[in-house]
Amino acid sequence: MKRPSFILANVLFVALITIILIPGRMDTPTNVPFIVATVIIEALFLWHYLPKSKRKPSSCYIVIIVWVLLIVWELVSTDLGLTHPVLIPLPENVFAVFSNKTPELMRNIKSSLTLFAEGFLTAIVVGNLLGLIVGWLPRVRETVYPIARVLAPVPAIVFTPYLIFLLPSFRMAAAMVIFLGIFWSTMLNTILRIEAMDKRIVDTAKMLGVGTGTMIFKVLLPYLYPSIAKGLKLQLPSAMLIMVMSEMYGATSGLGYFIINYTNYANYTNVVAGIILVGIVVTVLDWLVTLFVKKTVRWSE
Amino acid sequence: MPAVVFEHVDYSYIDINGAFQALEDINLRVDSGEFVCLLGRSGCGKSTMLSLIAGLAKPSAGRVLVDGAEVAGPGPDRSIVFQNYSLFPWQKALKNVVFALRQTHPGMTKETACEQALGLLERVGMSEGADRYPFQLSGGMRQRVAIARALAVNAPIMLLDEPFGALDPSIRKKLQDMLLELWDDDASKCCKTAIFVTHDVDEALILADRIVFMEPKHVVKDFILPARQPGQTGEDRLEQPGIKAIKREVLELFEKAPRGKGDEE
Picture 1 (cartoon, rainbow over the protein chains, first blue to last red):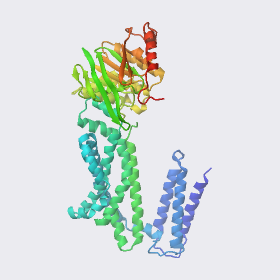
Picture 2: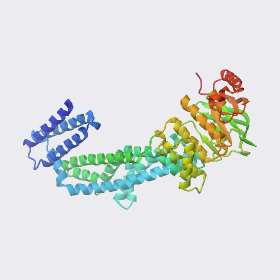
Picture 3: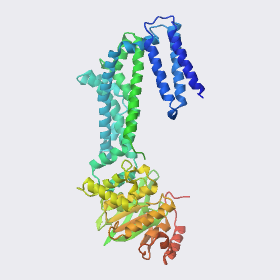
Picture 4: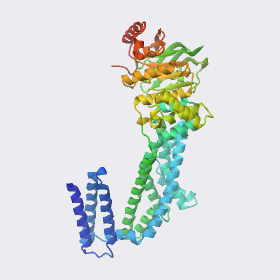
């Protein structure tokens, strides 16, 4: 016996395919990419929903909302022609961007991800490293922590004009903006984690007579690793936001550049496709981080 | 030769409720080879005494001497067992002991450390759980591993801060017997001197050679207990002549003792 919401989700899927196939008032060159995208969503939904072990009714509700949005979009724009095709791009055309502009999109994704890796990963590594050292040494902490408290809330993006001016390339400036946006919060969080950690762990290590290096790298780091790793998930969206914004400012490639560039040409079809792509990239990254955390954290309290 | 000496020790600290004096003019001498229980209600300052010996806290006034030298800070010449959650949760049981061994015996190879750690775990009855993380162990098993880790340090003084406080009575009994076995085993004695903090009268009577009874801030009375017979279980010990009289006296003190910080009803 299937749930009613599951039946409704599939009825909506069939309805969506039908209205895509019915020729509307607006002509579109091809509707194949839109149908492919729809089928991919349905396949992902079924893959998630059908195995009984991980079945969640919420996945039905989510997919119902997606179908309703797509149906409204398709009906209003393509089928009934109620909206201006430039301002509200036709879904067929938006999804066609993914197949027509694959090399260009891939190039931009690659550029964004490289930039992201440079800025985000260095910020995570340096931020945690300094956080551990600063957090452990009381005198250093008392000096650095107030300074960090003042600098951390300044939105990194405001530094962009100066960084572009100071650093040799736009790219380096963009990487630096991401770095600054993530670094301070990472370091502050790690300092606070050390302050909040169970004293008995530290006391036990002290009684064993461990030195500063052992304390930081063999006691504090492994103990705090799970919360640091889980923190990555929270930092990912803000890092992504800073990245796209910094690309909009000064870069000559990347997803943010792709979106801002076509906005300037009023090509909203490409803009909407770019926005959807950013969503997909963020989701995939988030999923990868979750997987990474799951694989590397083997213990709990 | 006294193992531990308190000379006019005061200890006070400041927290959100303001300044608080935990110990006032404490004078105490623990001789080498004694098993001493610091007994008292929660919040009477007995754990603070242990922290001072451990060097994890510094006296506000007076001196704490260990082996004749003033305590400068924590170090591996004293080993410690806390009540709970002091095992390193990211290391398996064996690794916890290996880490302690290699920290306190520089130059020891991994293989030797592993071998010795397995031996220590066997002595505390934990050869089965060597490959498990602390979160996979029960409270009793965790304390067994914590004791094995303290043994690994091989320090002359062992400090135990209510190590069995969070355990079920039956498991508690087993661990008390185990601790006594380790203490009585002359060939591989766990330590020369043991200082054990507890608020459980029976536990103190079972384990100790000497009970130091504390009221908030002060040492009130010192009891020297009749010698334990080797191989005696906890229950036998409580039936031993002389022990019952002391028990009555200690319980009376308990009744009269004012409540300590954090122990208000």
